[in-house]
Image 1 (cartoon, rainbow, N blue to C red):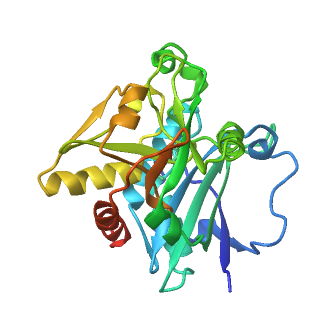
Image 2: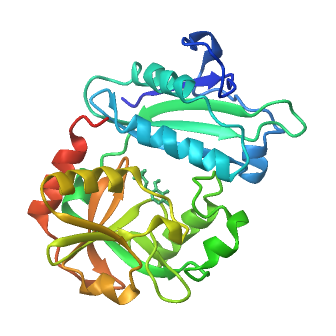
Length: 295
Ligand code: PLP
């Protein structure tokens, strides 16, 4: 039995002094049409979102997701979200998730209706796909050119490269291209030869006893899962670092993972058709940690 829940928020101004936002939420039928045909999120992908993993009814890393929502809003010139209102929306959605199993809560903040007065905002909760096989056996990736150089984000901030916008058509196209090439997923690389991220996940490498990930100022999303895992690794005494990583380092790494809020840690098992060893024990320990309640 799959499950689903949806609510619409009346977005509050970021300085709204209320402490209880229950009256700004309206539960809607998740299967029924809900958006106006004038919605700029659907017409232009003009909006931002977050996907929060839910484990046994507990929404993971809510603060990190809300901070990133606010960051994306600032990059996109959207009104600053009222974080307490969104936190309560997450709690309302989580209250409708089953006490056992994995789910996903999505938060969406759209530019709204063309010529309309305010942004549109909604939250959904749904059952997550079963990711146990991919966590154990890994993902085969291909490297795909993202079409810009490592310094492009600094030169062209209007490309919104560090924002989690609703414009994911390119990301989905990259996954289809990866499948055409016989793989499961992609790793984007810059035109001048540095690794970035996957279309829906961050990349982490183990190089000897260090864990490294591409620096988020290279126009990639700062992953909440990677951030959380690095805190965990640092607490265990491991060295972690944000670096500018050449493509050659990917195949040379001792192990590599794609990390994201719902799939969690997926070990990379092949790169551009060449098998690479996966570290099962370390991957299992990562996923044990990522499946534990995290705030
Ligand atoms: N990079 C991109 C482009 C993503 O879409 C995502 C998640 O959807 C991530 C990285 C990983 O972010 P998180 O760990 O917060 O899910």
